[in-house]
Length: 463
Ligand SMILES: Cc1cc2nc3c(=O)[nH]c(=O)nc-3n(C[C@H](O)[C@H](O)[C@H](O)COP(=O)(O)OP(=O)(O)OC[C@H]3O[C@@H](n4cnc5c(N)ncnc54)[C@H](O)[C@@H]3O)c2cc1C
Picture 1 (spheres, rainbow, N blue to C red):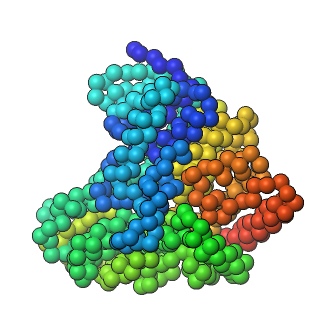
Picture 2: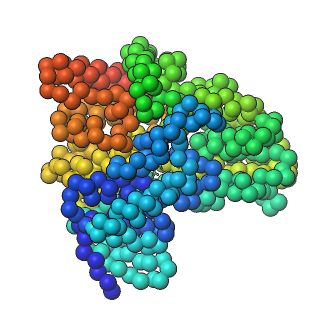
Picture 3: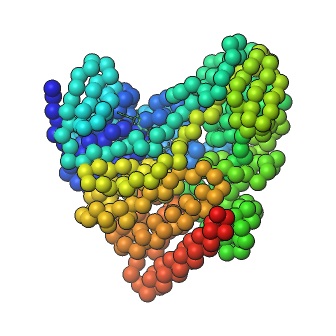
């Protein structure tokens, strides 16, 4: 049996594993073994549907040391006027380049593709069956977020014989010759499938959209990497502060948050109960609003040739309908575990829905700080949100982390240089030591603390 000695064993070459290694490669002289079941880095992007794009600008995605995209502003399509969104092909090619042109030539990274980590340092090739023991100083779990896309599993409801139900991956290949289309799932993948059909010129009357819950949506216009957008983003964030200070209950808060433009919703939707960071442009919202056959009867239980059985009722269908299963729970709400625990590092989000930024920051904390308690204090996980109430929880957790990071001058400086720090670019923290900078930081901190107290109160009144 072959044994490899290394400083870090990374389980998973997805975006988080790659963003983590990238920072440690630059900030330490450590060595790395990266293991992945796929034959290419990039994780779930290797199995993504062909028309998926990043939901947020390319500018803030990937690894910190290499730009993704060319800071292009889209001129056409429903993202026109906003910064480019890498396609799945670009994302996969990008991670391949990072591996081939940066990681492997460093001589400090060993990549074991098509290999499964089986615990206790044991790695098994899924092709040859060869077993390798990796003796590592630290093991990094870059699989904990458990990203699942529809093509990875069967639909979680019964599908009778004669019904055509496909993951979105097959949509371009199978879409022709159906009279109707039923998209199952209210999340971003469901939205993408609806938008793809509309883009092909399908009459919205031929689309049925099954949405067990309505979703709060993030306006992509608020996540843009340039000063001309930052002003309006700051105005909306000021509106959010105002909304929080005036709110009398969680539902009142969500209405106010919607009113100031911080979160959007489809016009026909009731007050949504789902919040999972789905990010869309206003033009995409307009398109989605063209679909009027929206079914809100809970989750699908079974699809028969002539009817769909749902939690709260049944609706008619026919065999000439193509069903697109978009129900996978892309990002689960995982229990929090300490990021640093003895020789194990478990990568998790430190800012909600900013996984690559979080992985890069965890790597920097690993390189720059000694004590495990201090590291964990700076790396408090923020679990992925699922509900409207989670919006409050992650807003508190994000703010508490930011307060800690802003209080550490060296970390402040590091964050200001980190290309993946989207919010840092939109809401920059003063870096200097002048009394004015100190005062500005103190007032920001006081405002953030007051906001957390108010959100805690609202959460308390809810329970
Ligand atoms: C459709 C979609 C669009 C998104 N768009 C954005 C966006 O625009 N911006 C943004 O910031 N985030 C976005 N996200 C969030 C996105 O999930 C993360 O940014 C990131 O890609 C997740 O990467 P990961 O490394 O955590 O997980 P994964 O991509 O799932 O990587 C984990 C890897 O671990 C491997 N693995 C698992 N178990 C083992 C084992 N035992 N042995 C060996 N290997 C193993 C898997 O093969 C996989 O390659 C999007 C997510 C989805 C689903």
